[in-house]
Amino acid sequence: MKYTAAFILFASLAAAAPPQAAPATSAVTSLRSTYVLGPDDQIALRALDAPEISDKPVRVDMSGHIRMPMVGRIKASGLTVEQLETEIAARLAEYLKEPEVAVSIVEFRSQPVSIIGAVKNPGVHQLQGRKTLVEILSMAGGLSDDAGHSIKITRRHEWGPIPLKSAQDDPTGKFSLADVDLKAIMEARNPEENIIICPQDVISVPRADMIYVIGQVQRSGGFVLKERETISVLQALSLAGGLDRAASPQNARILRPAAGTAARDEIPVNVRKIMSGQLSDVPLKSEDILFIPDNLPKKAIARAAEAAIQIGTGVVIWRR
Image 1 (cartoon, rainbow, N blue to C red):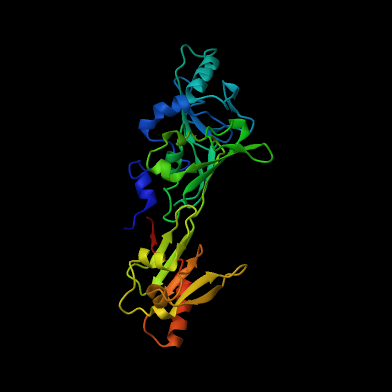
Image 2 (tube, rainbow, N blue to C red):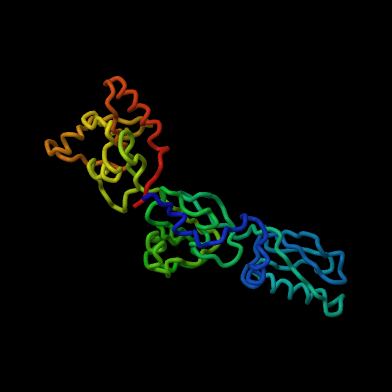
């Protein structure tokens, strides 16, 4: 049965806000005390009896400071919204009696996380507070159907080592690297692997190894291989539900990527004899296309094989 990995992993999560959008009202209280401001964030300030500084967006400069009338230059980087409000109120106390200050974040720009690979919306996303690995993947739209079986995380050492047993330093000593078992997260077997993500983390979801079965079979498409799994022609046919009545198994082809080119080599394979035990089963390699033609003349079979090369990577993907 076909299923979507992204659905299983993320169906229970609410849709994430756009990368630079201000958070929903329900999340504001949490962000005020958890989100740490940084360079390129944009804030807006509202202070009673101080219209000259109210409702005017101010961007945190690259040195981490903001500058406002009456307030002067303040170090905003490294402070939460609540802490910045306290600091601004202390400055305004020189001019106003018991000043009331409210700071809001207009744009989140200082805590980027790069999410690449087999996700629905790869790119750079902003943390907007404390986020776990699953929450960040959800912000990227969830996993693609062809996602692999592990997630790779790269973290700058200034944020400390990744808190996982698999973590190790890269050769330069500047980054911490770790792999996370995707299946363990999906099945909630190792909740400790759903770690808190830090700014500037790079999260990579590699594409899974796959084989394709197309043509006269019951269920054509791409089949995701399990980690370190090998598969044969008969096993692939079993995944595809077996042969269709119009199949010509003695004229089957394996279309295999040719090294260093975009072309594929055609390897004839007599599936009929393999099924009858007259020939040994044939192992398939990652990205192979097993093409089962119908009862057509040989020229038509050749043309159909050419068409199979074109459509082989555009088929339905099945996971087990």
